[in-house]
Image 1 (cartoon, rainbow, N blue to C red):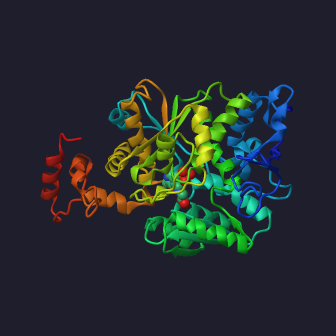
Image 2 (image 1 turned 180 degrees about the horizontal axis):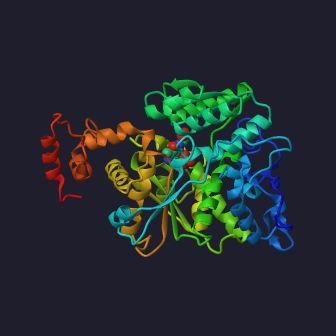
Image 3 (image 1 turned 90 degrees about the horizontal axis):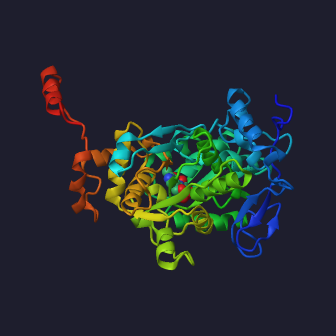
Length: 461
Ligand code: F0G
C-alpha cells in the first residue's frame, strides 16, 4: 500500500449546515429541518480546508484517484460497494459501525448510437443507475442514510415514495435488521415497485392521496414517533447519491463531459450530483464543471416553472400528473439545492410532453439498454436542448438513467400495443408514435406463418 495513502478505514469528518441561514449542527431533528428557519441541511467537511487549499482526507488528488481504483480489486465489502469505495468524500460512520451495503454503485456507462442520431448529436452516453441492486439510483443514497439510521439505534425507518425510494429503503432496512414503513400514493405507482417493498418486508401503506400528500403525513408522523426519515430531505441520502457523479468522472478518466442531463422529481438527485461536481472541482479532481441540466415532465413541472416564470425566486406547488409516475411530484423538497447547482454549473431546465417521453423511452430501448419512463425524460429533453442550441452536436453528453426498464413493464406493454394514451388528453397525438411500436404477434404453431412474418420484416429496421 502507498505509505501516504489513507488506510482502509479512512472516512471524512462531517457537519451539517442549513442551506438558508447557515446554522451549523452536528445532529438534526427527526424531520431533518433547520430548527431556526425550517430549511434543509447539507453535509459539509470542515477538515477539507487546509493551508494548501481543499484536500479530502488530507491527501493529494492523484493518491485519492489511485486509492479508489485499487479498491476495485479488493474483496472488502466497503471496497466492493461503488459508494463506500469513495468514502473519503462521505460522512464517517463511528468506529465499530459497518455500512449496510448491497454492493450498490459500479453502474455501467453505455454508448447510445441510435439515440444520438435521434437527438442530432455526434455521440451520446448514458450512466445507467437502474443497474443498482434494487434497480434504481436510490440504492446509492440508501446505503449511506440507512447505515446512519442503524448507527443511531432506530428500530423503524420510513419514507413517502413514488415507488423507487420505498423499494430501496425496504431492502436496506431488511439487510440492516430494521423495520420499514412505506407511504405510497394509492394506484399511482408501478406494480413492480410495489411488489419489491412487499417482498423486502416493509409495512406498505397505500395512502389515498398523491406523493405530496404522503410527504405531509410522514412529516407529522416522525414528529410523533421515533422513526428515522429516509426521504431525500435526509442529507445523508444525497451524500451517497453524490458518488454516481464521482464514479462517472472516474469512468471518463476524470475528463468532464460538457453536459450531464438528469430527470427532476423531488430534486434530490440533481442536487446530489451537482454537489459532487462542485466538490470535485474544489478538490481539484476535475479541472472544469460539466453543465448539469434538469428535465421535468410537462405535467409535473414546478421546478421548470419556478425558473422560467419566477427566475428561481419562488416555487409554486402544482397538481402533478404524468404517466412517468416516479416523477409525479408537485412540491419538490430540494428545489433550492437544485437551483443552486444549476446556477453554479451553468445548466438549464426543460420540460417534455407525455408523447415525447414515450418516444424517447422506446428509442433508449432500441439501443438495447431500456429504462423506466421517468429516466427517458433525459433523452426527450436533450432533443429540445439541441434544437435550442444549448447543446451543440459535437459536445460530450451523459444522460443519467435513473431506473431499470423492468420497473414499469405495464407502460412498455401499453406503449407497444398502442393503447398507452387511450382515454387521456394525449390520445390524438399517439399515432405519431406508430413507427416505434412493436406489438407482440400472435401466430399459429406453424413454421410457415413465422417465415411469412419474417419476410414482412426483412429490410425494415
Ligand atoms: N427517476 C426515477 C426513476 C425516480 O424514481 C425518481 C424519484 C426520479 C427520477 C427523480 O429524482 O426525486 O431526486 O428528483 N423517485 C422518488 C421515489 C421520488 O420516491 O422513488 P429526484
